[in-house]
Length: 278
Image (cartoon, rainbow, N blue to C red; front, side, top):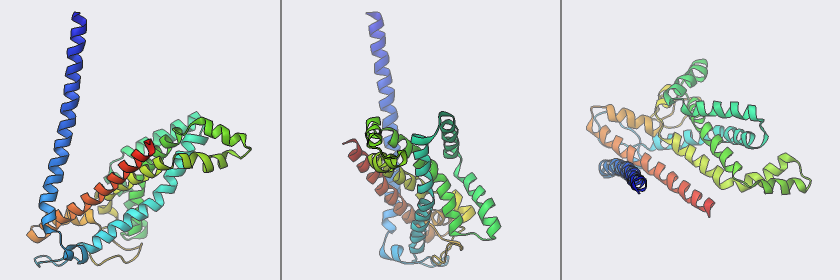
C-alpha cells in the first residue's frame, strides 16, 4: 500500500509539473501575441500596406516593398529547398542503405541545428563575395539552406507512415519501384509532405540574420535577382533600433503583419495535420 501511495503522489507531481510547463508556455505565447497586437494593430493602415518607406523624420510611409520582398524571398527559398528536401526525404525513406541513410540523416540533423547567422555568413562567402553584390538570389539560397532539413525530415517521416502493404501491392502489379514510389507512396504521404513544406515556410518567413549578410535591404522595390532586396524582418530590425518614433511604430506594425503571416501558415498546417489524421 505504501508503494502504491508513493507512485500515486509521484504521478500527481509529474502531471502537475507537465501542466505547469504547458501553462507557462501558453501564457508566454499569449503575452507576446497580445503585446504585438496592442502595439502593432494601432499603426496598421492603408498607407502602411500600399506605401513605401520615407526618409527619417518624415511622417507616413509604409512597408509595401518589404512585404513584396518577403514574399519573393520566401517563394525563391521554397523553389530551391522543396525539390532538394523532397528528393532527400524520398531517398531516406525508400532507396538508401542503412549506412547511407544514417549518414544523410545525421547530416540533415546537423544542418537543422546550424544557427541561422552561420548560414548567412556561409551564403555571403560562397555567393555574395564571388558576385561582388548583395542580392535576392543569395538571400533566397540562404533561406533554402534553413528550409531543406525541415522538408527532408517531414517527407521521410510521412512516407514511412504509408503502409508497406501499399508498396507490395504496387510492386505485385509489375510496375518499377520508382513508379510505385511516385504513383502510390508519395500521394499517400502528400498531406504530411505539404505540412512539412508549410512548416519550412513558416520557419524562414521571420529569419533576419541570414538577410543581413545577403539581401542587405532595398526600400525602392524589387529590381532583379542580382540586386539587393528589402524584407519585413530586415526593416523591422532597423526601424526598431532607430531613434525615430515613427519608424519604431512602423516596426511594431511590421511585426504584427509578420506574426499574422506565420499564424495563417500555422493554422493551415494544423488543418492539414488534422485532415491527415482523419
